[in-house]
Each structure stands twice: as C-alpha cells, then as structure tokens.
Amino acid sequence: MKKQLRHLFAVCAATAALSMAGSLTSMAATRGELSSVTSDTISGWAWEVGQYDSSLTVEIRIYEDIDRDSVPVKTVTTQANQFSQAVSDSIGDGWHAFSVPVNWAELGGNEYFVSVYSVMGQTRHQLGSTFSYKTGTETGSRIITGPGDMFGLDLDESEAGSSSKNENSLKEGYIELTGKETYLGAFTVTGYCNCSLCSGGHNMTFSGTVPKSNHTLSADLTVLPLGSKVWIDGVIYTVEDKGSGVNGQTVDIFYDTHEEALEHGTITADVYLL
Figure 1 (tube, rainbow, N blue to C red):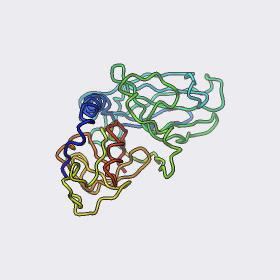
Figure 2 (tube, rainbow, N blue to C red):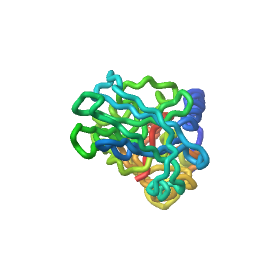
Figure 3 (cartoon, one colour):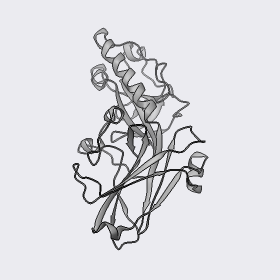
Figure 4 (tube, rainbow, N blue to C red):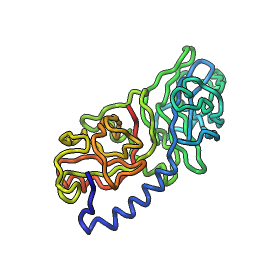
C-alpha cells in the first residue's frame, strides 16, 4: 500500500517529527544483550549494525535495588571485542562479545541487579534484559525485559525519544519480552489505514491478506521480509505490507480508522524480531 499525505494541518508537525526520528534512529542502530551473570563473570555482546571491523564500548552497571532513583554500586566500562561462536552464528562475526570478572563479595550485599548499555558518544542505550543475581548462587536470571531508562539513568536526546516499556507494561494485552528476541534497533514508527489518503483505498495488503489492527505491519521488505514477526511496545505484529514511504528502519502500523492512525503520529520505538 502506498501512503499519501494526510491532513494539511499535520504536515508541519509530521515533518519535524520525522526529522528528529531519523536522527534518533541513526544514533541507536545497535544490537546486543546481557547474556549471563554468574558467580564470577558478567558476559554479553554488543554490535553497531553493519560495523564488522569496529567494536562498541559497553558500560555494565550493578545496582543493589531496582528503584528508578538507584545509584550503581559498581560501573565497569569495557570493549565488546572478544570472540563468541554464538554471536558469530547470529550476525556473521563473533568478535563483538564481552566478558568481565566480578567479585560479588567485595560489594558487601546479598542481591544485585545488572544492566548493560552500549555507549556511542554521549548516547547510552540499554541492551536486552536486566539480570538479578543473589550472592552464593551459580547464575543470575533475567527479570526485566526490553531496553529503557530502568534505573533513572540520565538520558540524552536520542534515548529520550524511545518509548518506555516500564510505563507501557501496565497496558491491557501487553506482551512481555522473553529475552530470546533479537533487538533490531530504534525504528521510526507511523500509523496508516486503508482509506484513500493512506492507502489509495486498497483493502488488501501487498501479501494478499486483509489488514488487521494490532497485527498488520508495513515495512521495508529488504529490512523485514514478508511474514516477519516483530515486537513493538508490547504488541506482536506480522509484516504483511509495504509502502513507498516505508524505507530502512521505518515501519507503519495498521489501524482500523484514519483517526486512530493520525492519533498514533510519528514516534521512535524499539523493535525486536521474534
């Protein structure tokens, strides 16, 4: 389906939003996760999408509680430049892993919460799930899923544009991440319907299905092929459509009415591939 210009009164606001969203997307094209927290090691991986010959800086933060005003009891900065066969199998280059030793006894507590952030200039973006770890146990466990400002980390403009999973997790029908998804980055997300303004009045998607709200997604098929299932803000969508204005890290969510599509506006949201 091809998207058309919507109401004239929205053009200026949409243009400004798209400009900002494009900037945010380019600054947050990172993938990775905190893979494990054990009795002596914190491990994971981080990769700037498409950059096989360089490594990302990552910041590991350890907290004693889960409140948003928490201050980390320990922060470790390292490079994601170690080899991992699992990472190689996932992205085609294994030299983007990290593993650092940790001495829990020196921290003096009983339970800790660990998050990892990619660092690009002044931008910090949480990668994957937060882990909890109790001293005396062999391994920790994932407890919070999805990136975001979980601990009140000071955000710059690029991070502030992303949607908050913690606030949205109370929405009816919200689907939690499992930690097994692949983080694709921050995408520009818009809304469309099957009216003449959005789609030229077509009632079928490019794949030949009838579009449905909370299900159908339009995407750049070179980025997300037809049939791809992705998680956005607690909803799982299936790529069934494409559009002339949906390129790169941009997706378009189908709505039943034009009013709902307009209300959605243009946002930046984290996208996960199932």
